[in-house]
Structures are given as C-alpha cells and as structure tokens.
Length: 144
Image (cartoon, rainbow, N blue to C red; front, top):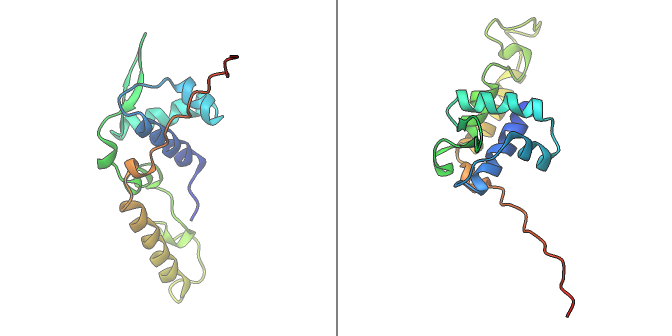
C-alpha cells in the first residue's frame, strides 16, 4: 500500500499536533521542522480543517491545532478522508476501469483483502499512539 505524499504530510502534521495538543502551530513552523513546502502544507491544513481534524485561527497569534482529542482520531479515519477517492488498482474504480482480466481475475479479491487488513490496522491506531513529541531543546554547556 502506498499513501500519497499529501496524506503523508497530513499524518506528519497531525502527529506533531498530537505531540503538543495544547498549543497552536504556524504552517511555516511545521513545514520547516519536517522540511516540506509551506505552500503544499497550507493545502494539507485546509483539507484537514475541512474534514474536521484541525481547527484554524487566522491573524496574529493564529495557527492550527487539533479540533478534538488525539485519542479520538484514528489513522484510518484520516487516510479515508484524504485518499477516499483513489482506487488501489484500476479494477477497484467504480466503473471497473479498463481491466481486461475482469470478471475472471483472481488477484482482485486478494488485493481487496490486503487493503482491508491495512485499513483495519489503521482503524485500530489512534493519533495519540503516534504522537510526535517535540525535540528537546539543547542548551550550550556552561563553562565552570
């Protein structure tokens, strides 16, 4: 299974928010920390807000934070919200795609079972379990 980079960035951002759930983050802060495009992350933040995972506040002192406790958000819920429209393989599309092996294909059922096992694992994992804690601040050693 392969997630899009969009979903990967969303999961990273959510994991970071879960690591410090009582504060707001600026898009530029998370983009810099994870070395990803601020513009791309802004689109991720917009979609996460529309899906109800994060709350945003504009203006001075603004930013974004989790909209609900990390213990109540499953990774499966996030992946479905962001990747729901993409088919694992062509024959999984609503129209069946252009697969010439249908209806005698024996692979489709195996891939469907693998997808369900993957999503079942994500459904059983909360964001709190994957929280990314802030890096410890290092202070220079003082001379004695």
